Length: 275
Image 1 (cartoon, helix red, strand yellow):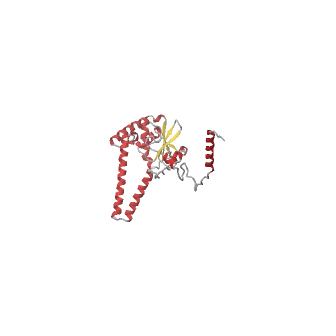
Image 2 (cartoon, rainbow, N blue to C red):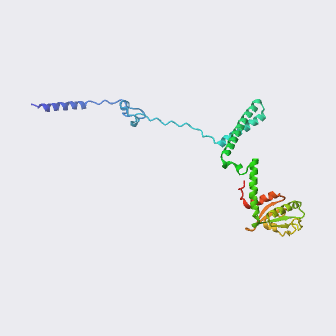
Image 3 (spheres, rainbow, N blue to C red):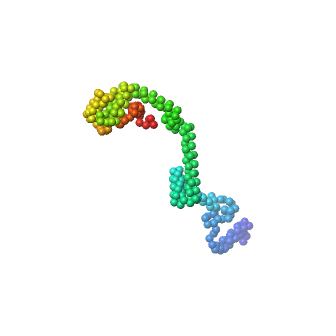
């Protein structure tokens, strides 16, 4: 039977294919190598030759390096406490075991702290010189010349206050005939009152007279009503007519300057403003 040439070729190719498929497939002895990188291995062609990198699991990313532990810095107060403790320990050791080495160690360490204190004192003084807000001597001079000028200015200001005091204030003066201190204080109160024309109401606590205040009044519980210590004489009290309020000035003997300074401060300066 005659078969055309193209059909013959097709039949031949089909026969060859059938023979190929009919052959047995060899069984692999072990598991196949992975074609991509894994934590256990990598394919040489897929990873090494093509150089795909760790984005295709061909190389493990390096783990981040653990940051070195940094000890926290000690506070200044902690360091100062440590220095104090060491100084005390060295001193105690030098006293209890006074060997040349122990005494020398203590002296050297103590000298280091003295130098540190001297440096601090020097810087402190320089800072005050250069910042007038920190210089207290501008308010209260300590030099002879500055102090004299401050006292003159203070006296002028005090005198101005005392000159106008009688428009609002008067004085209560409590004394006793049997009180020796009252004999010293009475002329002082009288002199200050006469200088500034301040009215004084003298009150005898025991009923006895006073040669400096002949027009005295015998006490009838005035001190208790004013909130004063009832058993202490002499006592000077400023009376504020505007507020109907007693302002205790002091007890016992005071000089004229001290009496005037107290009156000046209590009537014209708020607490804390003069210091």
